[in-house]
Amino acid sequence: MSTIVLIPARMASTRLPGKPLADIAGRPMIVHVADRARQSGLGRVAVATDTREVADAVRLAGYEAVMTRDDHQSGSDRIHEALQALDPQRAVEIVVNVQGDLPTIEPQTIRAVFRPLEDPAVDIATLGVEIVRDDERANPNVVKIVGSPLPSGRLRALYFTRATAPWGEGPLYHHIGLYAYRRAALERFVSLPPSPLERREKLEQLRALEAGMRIDADIVLSVPLGVDTLEDLERARHMLANR
Image 1 (cartoon, one colour):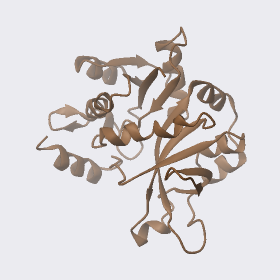
Image 2 (cartoon, helix red, strand yellow):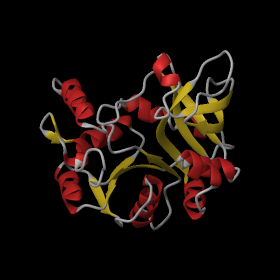
Image 3 (tube, helix red, strand yellow):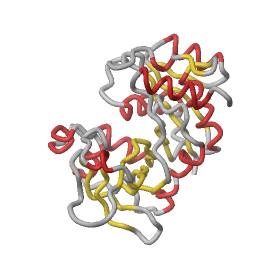
Image 4 (cartoon, helix red, strand yellow):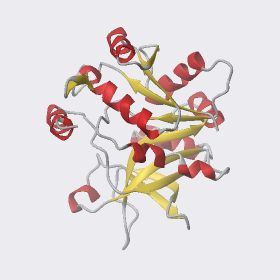
């Protein structure tokens, strides 16, 4: 299946403004993410941004960039606009959404998000990691997947929540917000209004579940570092200093 990896990037982060262009080992953070996406081998890679400086930095590094509107409410809306601009002939069948603040993500982790789509019944694929730290179990910033285990070692998602769930003995799974959409699923998703549970939990993937779409999660071994604060940025710089 023809696949494109799209990386949404905006400069107006509330906690770390300008982070796509933050220097890590001599290169902008967004370029490190593009490097990892290219190394995944899934297909064409492009950055979707609302800022000319980000597009210029991406192109200088040899990657595609597409300018998008500055009023998008989510990365999904931004990559949908980018897809329309980059593929008007509709040749692309699968769209992988990699967040632009994951400079240390491993290429095999990006590849893993594609696997659930081997099942034609799956509309959207994502990733999860088993929670091993007690402090994460009740942390509302750690989104949990509530799902039915599948023989493949994946989960069929029934719900996503900031609460500690499900109740009782057994593993809990940390949701990693990296997605692979069938094109028709992405188009349907962005056409839907925000759903009641999405607004309540502030988790847009619930919109898809409430609309009857199927989301499966591949379980990987570790959570990639998301850069949201200056402390995160310093950690990323330390991790990539010798690469």
